[in-house]
Structure formats: C-alpha cells, structure tokens
Length: 235
Ligand code: ADP
Ligand code: MG
Image 1 (cartoon, rainbow, N blue to C red):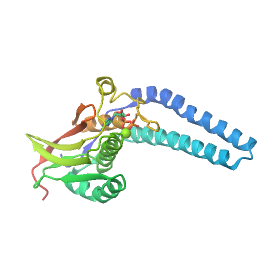
Image 2: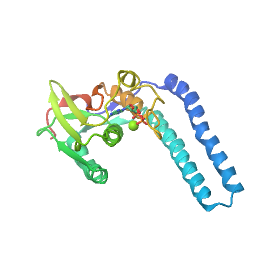
Image 3: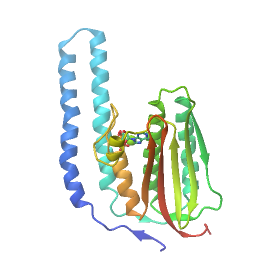
Image 4: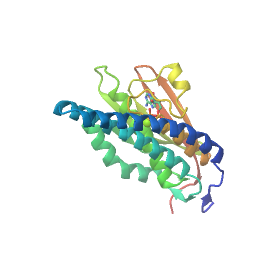
C-alpha cells in the first residue's frame, strides 16, 4: 500500500461527455460571437460596456466547462501516497477564510486530532474540497434569510473511514435538485457548469470513497466525503 496506481478507464464516460461538452461550449461561443457583432455595430459606450461584460461572463462559463472536463480526463492514472487531510485543509484555509470574509460568511474549521492518513492524490482531494466548499459559499449567498451565514469544514473518524464534512446554512435543495446533484451539466446557477459534483463523485469513488448529501430547503446542506484509511498515524 505504499502507493496506489489508479487504472480504471474513463473512456466510455469521457466519450459521452465530449458530446455534451462540445454542445455546451458552443452555446457561450455563439453568444460571444453575437455580442462582438453588436459591439462592432454600436457607438454607444454604455452598450459597448454591457455587451463586453456579457461576452466576458460567457467566456468564463466556457472556460470553466473546459477546465472541469479536463480535470476529469486528467484524473486517470495518478500515483497516490498516504496524505494528511488535516494538513491539506489547513493549507487551503487562508484562501477559504478570505473568501468567506469577503462574502460575510463565518467559516469554522474543526479538525480531528491524531487523524489517520488516507491514500488519495493531493491534487484530487484539493479539487473535491474546493468544489464542495465553493458550492457551500454559493448556497449561503443564495439564502436571503437574516441568519448569520455559516459554513463548517470538519474532519472526523467513523470506523475505518475518515470523514470530511462540509456543512452550510444556505439555500438547501428541493427533492428534484437532490436527484440531479450528480447529473453532469445540471445546474441551478446562472454561471454554473453543473460539472463540479459529478467530477468530485467520480474522483472520490476512484479511491473507494463515497459522497453523501443531506439537505433541507432554506435550512442548508451537509456534504460528507468518506475515505477509507490505511495508516493509523503519520510516521
Ligand atoms: P454548479 O456549482 O456549477 O452548479 P455542481 O455540480 O457543483 O455544479 O452542483 C450542481 C448543483 O447542485 C448546483 O447547481 C446546486 O443546485 C446544487 N448544489 C450543490 N451544492 C449545494 C449546496 N451546498 N447547497 C445547495 N445546493 C447545492
Ligand atoms: Mg459547483
């Protein structure tokens, strides 16, 4: 168990995804082309600004789609070593904290002491945690109740699994949204890609882990990532 090479192929899934992604990327490209035409035809500075902002936002969406998709296809064979998940979360925490601060969200980080190590590629787990925390921030922003917006990132042990729990008091999900949580390209956000959690789930399953979700509309959402651990403590 010194290292684990991931070998399962994604080719079938990838082939299907290529078709949908091509279609999805073409939409923003068509709009960008339209906005550029409009910019060319107008002398009104205000309209030029408006069209430019719209084009830029479409460009970001196309770029996000491609990035998420490439992350999935790159995930095939990566060597993994025992990883301290607490250490990884601590490294990410300053970025998360400043983002939370900007958004008026209180972020609690509650890490288990004496954590066991899990075998997962650092880059993959980073990608999963970033996606899940980003969703939590976006959901708390979308909840317009007067409650203090809060997000908790926690690590815990349950039997032979390490749990990474991300809890928010954001907008929550309807039954219908929950059913499509992992459906690629399904998003409820204006600039969403709907690729984030689909990729996260695939990555976590590669390492024999699971992702669970609990959600209540306007109350919040808890995402639990479970990963098996093999080593009791870092040497
Ligand atoms: P995206 O964030 O680009 O929409 P994701 O795959 O990350 O794509 O998420 C898919 C959908 O799941 C989101 O559009 C949203 O409706 C829902 N969702 C994910 N996380 C949360 C959360 N923490 N709270 C509420 N809804 C969520
Ligand atoms: Mg997302």
